[in-house]
Length: 350
Ligand code: DP6
Image (cartoon, rainbow, N blue to C red; front, side):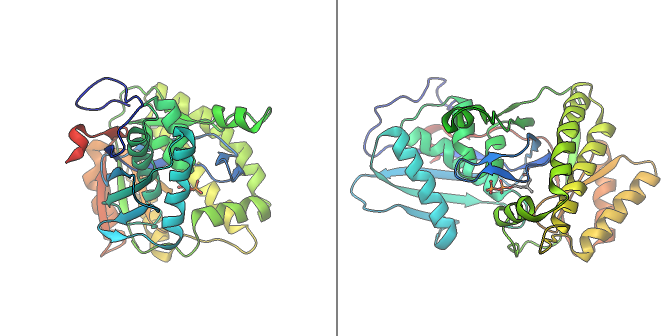
């Protein structure tokens, strides 16, 4: 990870009042992460692969506060509380442990994505926090290490370190916990020229009823469909990597859609069921089928919420957005392309 201002590494020692600002974008998984094998270390059951978006960035500033006795966190100018605060403080504890420094921090986050609506706000959020906190505490800027660090805030954040397409390795499941931790990180995936767009239909921007963390735990623990999906996800990943390499957007879309619908099937079979799809989600899924019948390459994916993201060619994005709007009047539709990886802002972003 490089500063825009200077290509040099950020090295300790850092001053007591060090501050750094980073920006990161959300990513949408085309082969999903759903299920952990280690909740403490955020080690996933399966490999996953995503596209980082060029919309909805999160900007986070971390400033060391040598005289403070606790961390202060604000989201869009409002003090963070409850679970959101707890997760960030736990993440800062990890950074402090690695840096060997006790200073508390002041964290300011500006999020442009609706929080908690299955639009990957935790991915951009923890990627930006990892990059800014690592710089402020003098942890260095190795991209793999930052991806592993971001993973500990939210698994999907490990992928937002990178622009374009990124593959998060589940990592080795033999050996010690420390070895497993070292082996689970994301890296960029080579892709031939594709010119993709993701049309994001926001059907409901409110927070979800069941967090993805709780939902994936319940799915792994109770769904009879989980193991078959996890196995087939390995085939999906192999097919996805090959499709990206040869620039075959039709295959990318087909694999993404089957993987996402399979993930939702695992949740529907959980006990009790987790259902994120709303009636409007199904209407949008129908419109995607109709687009394909009309000869337009469009494939749907969904995460832990009712919103639908439609992969298509950039040139078709306007038509796809119009079809989605027609299917779910009143929804807000955003067109995203592949976006950049997380980065430090020059001059502390001020
Ligand atoms: C459906 O990364 O939000 O978006 O690791 O518990 O924070 P935690 O979960 P999170 O889960 C994302 C799940 C998903 C699929 C994906 O992004 O791969």
